[in-house]
Length: 257
Image 1 (cartoon, rainbow, N blue to C red):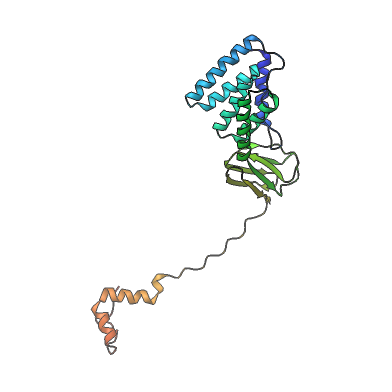
Image 2: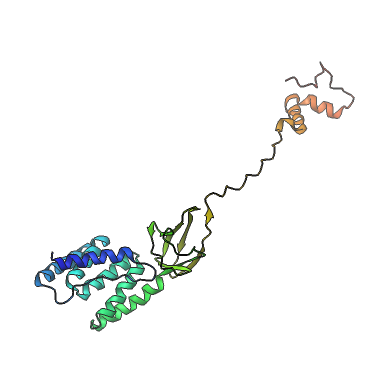
């Protein structure tokens, strides 16, 4: 593989890792005319990508199409990058790939261009938005993570992130404060706002309310009445009907424990 192609692939990885809410994903292509060897390798990768699609191996297909585009700059490879991302549910990246395709390759076949424009509109509608309100001011020791990945804080307040539909987790950390965490699920195109509340780490938890003493069931007179009814049966019944009988030691109405 040529050094230029390696550099292009490395650029793709770096851009994908550092993308924030305000920056679009981009896919690098060779500058100038690629060599015949690079084109042949790109063609083999493109064919391998299509084969992976036929077998349902979408992640493998994406790697092949990205490499193919990085080597050749052929718009068909970028189109397949966009459609594969769409199939994987990565709609933010898919939208950006379609947008890049239409912007950087204006001489597409009219039918392909119309299809790309239609899919771009669909992907735009699917992208959801998470707005983080009341976030502390930007500083070096403030960490904002989304789905386990630290996000770049550009200082905007509130801070907004574009996310794919589905479940996402937010975590905000700063020294001397307890981490703030939030989880939520987004529908297509849904926008949610989360208000961050940082609590100092040295704040003790609220005192627990003292538990009210539980009355013992054995202290209940109704229990003893029930026990008497069950154990002495007819004797207790006779007592209730004949109030003249006394509960004296030795009488049949006394329950012996």
